[in-house]
Length: 218
Image (cartoon, rainbow, N blue to C red; front, side, top):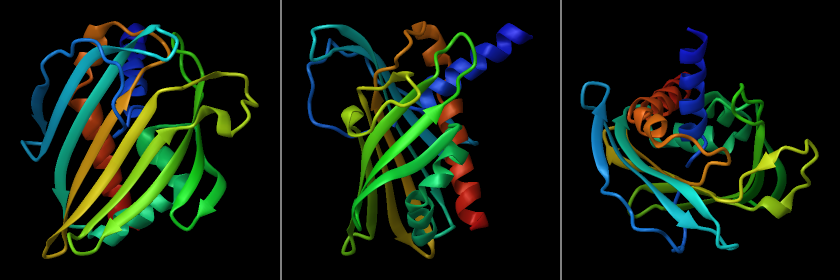
């Protein structure tokens, strides 16, 4: 039972910490994207596990996914949820999530910390979060891109260098919103590929459902 619990925790840690959209990188030949559904078909998750070569020529695992669903909470509640960085830990299962610097009304430096369970290492992430909106299209977008040098590593833990995400919300009328979560990252701890694949679509759906619950309760 204990080993099963550790596997579940490992799956959730790798997937919920991977969130996207970035500029092109040197990638190895990608595998075919896999499409799955969850929540009785209401959630669609496309995922891809491959490799990339980092700036030092080292090969790393690359986890990517795009998940979509719709909800009736309204777009403003999701905007407020994402701007309240202290609540990010509630849908990402992080130990700590906070703003360490405000660059402008639409740009912040964020710090995430996870006190992981063995066999995974404690890790942290520093990102720049940018907010943009397209009122004509009824779109609101938050992008997070790794910026590891922008905050001191006070805890002395392993820090993510390749972590990118995008939360996109589109008003589709009648108070409904289309949510899209896109992720692209390289895990710090090398994880068996079968374990990562086994986490889809369940772990991503779990993140979406937590976001929906938080938005509706605000």
